[in-house]
Image 1 (spheres, rainbow, N blue to C red):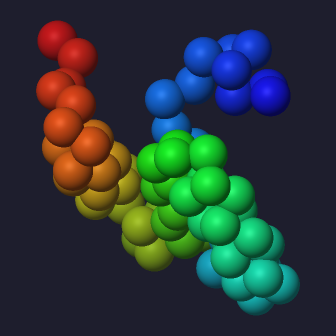
Image 2 (cartoon, one colour):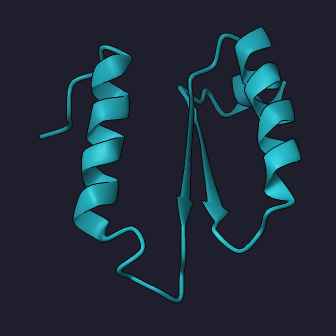
Length: 75
């Protein structure tokens, strides 16, 4: 599997708030990641509106995701 070839630890899935069709895709991806025992971090953003998900909030969400996996932040 490609995940083994690239030795990935998790999957990030950034979705755009205007793309409602991604709801089905995320369900499939969630199931696939669960089968592979691969943590999935999915979030919704808007590349045109920086106030929708400010960078500091995204960084906080990523830090929470890493902490939930038991991973420590890089120094």
